[in-house]
Length: 115
Image (cartoon, rainbow, N blue to C red):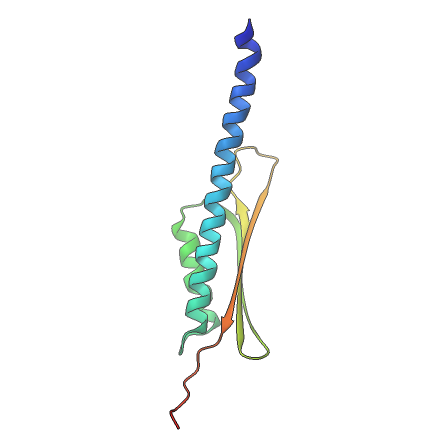
């Protein structure tokens, strides 16, 4: 009789653990995509197009662990490049959405001749 009461709770806990693991993995992939895109965009000879393509490549290689992804790269005043990646972790509960995002910013690399 106790199994009838305990098993649904155990299954719910297992579902929560698996969902948390999916969210944590998606958050790590999002951070990696933002870092990779930022590094490419800031590199000498890089640019926003290359950074966006590299970030999208990381997201595509995650084999669908993130849905609804968007990559934006902006050059801010002062030569700062900001890369933002957003999306949602795959959900095993159909009506829930778990958003993930990462933002990385750094200075644009430029060549300065030695004086």
